[in-house]
Image (cartoon, rainbow, N blue to C red; front, side, top):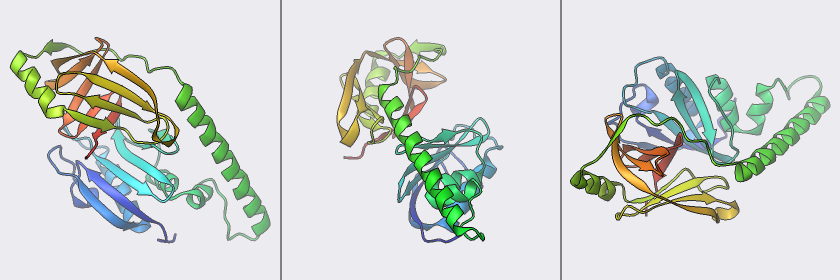
Length: 255
């Protein structure tokens, strides 16, 4: 496998080398990461899946030549999501995840196409067919993502309203813009100090396809501060730069 592909990787809640997880660990930005190093990081994250992560939510955020990916641990297994092609799964091996990140050649190899075999014309035709299917599936997923109904609200945990002073401190601390991405189908939360919250849905080219104002109430849930949104769901404060809403992670947008 060639190291021709170069990636940018952010380690979230991970020590250097992704060999240890911790909620207090700062993000680590890696540039010019070769494919060999990416494989080491994904396999190291996989090794942490069966360990006690405590309050940490370790992630590898990967910028590849053909898209952006987040590799994380969910229910003791690796999971991959992409803002670009909307792939995902919770039962994938490190090799399958690396194949998705590294692109068409790796995906072709993963499904058993061997370009070095004694039948080059057949392999080439098969690869074209696989790529055509991937493009059709991607377009179909994008269309579904843009037209899908709003997510159903999860069951709310027990919560308690915050006192006035605590509520003001919470809103002051999380005021800002948060995004899951900028591609079509991504979402954003805009939180004002006065408690106004707008939930945005991006269309093609970064346009705003939907802007919904949410009524929120500062509360305490899971022993952490949160915002009760429209009395239906929680906007959970993970740390100073991350929020979770409807099981999606929103990252603070840096001005």
